[in-house]
Image (cartoon, rainbow, N blue to C red; front, side, top):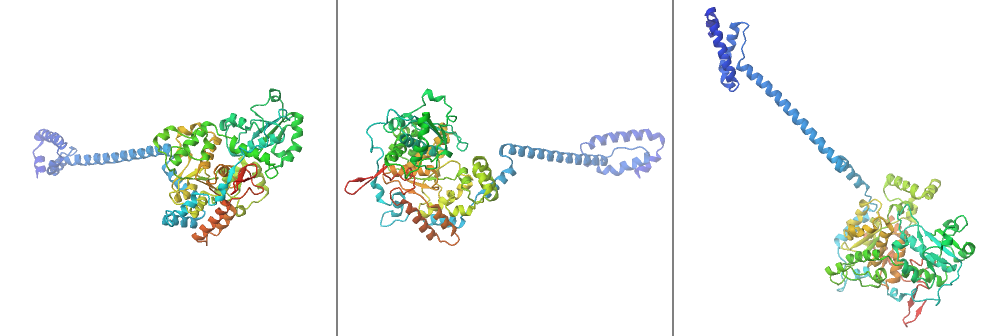
Length: 618
């Protein structure tokens, strides 16, 4: 109705109507911008007026509402898109940061899974029984008020061991020193690591005495395995060595100037291990080497690994071996001081007390700062475990340690690089890992070592010093052992980074610290009878231990047989057989034929046995 009245008003009123409408439009536009809701009743009125005017059109509150809704919707869409892009960029940035700092979250998860897969439990049933036994009986049994089981674990079970005394230092078969005129000079460039080189040095002393020659202070060859540039004077006290042996063998630090310019290989004076039999008899040196020495005045032994035998060596020369190994070779003061501190912290006492300590540390037995903070008292006991399970040993053994195809490829690659002759032989022959294990040729894994200790009765509190370098397989390989015995430490745990810094890049000097810690231990546990460190430490403990330094030495062949019955053997039966196996090695007897004097020094010229009447034989 309102629209019709407006049309009938005539043209005279058109301009005024338009003016009024424009005014209302402007007003509605202004108000609509702030209060669109109040204009809802005028919606139909504006639509009618627009129809009456014809082509005339004005903006209504409804248009404004639609427009505002569209703008608002677009704004919401843009805001959502912006937030989404911002979140995406933030996630990408954080992932990039994680990737830079932690090699990626996903990769980290994959690495964790892979590390868990690397852990190889070879004897799961026995490991579960050992864990149960240690948890059920965490402490040794007490019988008649004394810890009889515990006592047997930390002492030599056979009292005869105390009847054997060191004799190499005081028994001299000659009052005078070596001849002033001799046959020439002997050079030795020893290969291998610390312990192989130690054996080579003492064998060289014997050969020099045998051939009536002057020994030039031995040199140590660089090894791609050990990667150590240390020479004799970096490890042992040169002057002490020369002076201690002066009544047996003349030792000089360098060749005379007249001989230094000689091409020893060209004149036939360089002798490699290929030219001397392994563990050769003294007569071979007299027959083959003495003529060269007499002709050229000098002989150079290159390598000199295990070139001198044991059984055919006369007593007076055997004595020289023992004088060299057990008395003349003293570690340099820096190693003595670090080793003394290491043992003090392991024992938690302020002073050293044993004959072994005196031999190892000399005047460097006491650390003053440590003594001020620790009162002298009963020392803590610790067991030293030599885990000869480094990659070189694992690769050379040709055994299988449960790592599958990845392990086989890795070890074969190591052989190709470090043991090319062995790798070449494997191309033409087949070696059975199972047969190697049954023959006792496989080093014990940390898991297998832990099973031995638990079968012998060492409880979870046992403080264990682990000697050796990098365990093949790392922490996952050690985990079965640490589950049984959580109190495991290494020299890196006991000494600070600053205290280890002088030896950090020298494997032989680090091995010397292991030698000291193992020799000083209340109990020393061997896992590989072929290891030179185990051999030398065992002999050192027999010689200087006064019958109070027990060594645990599993028979790997017998142990492999026991482990092969894992599926049916009960824990009690496993314990009994392991204890019998270890007990047999502890039996006291003179050095068996064919055995190393460095490992078994109870032999004429080296140790003496006291009788009940005060007499001494050997």
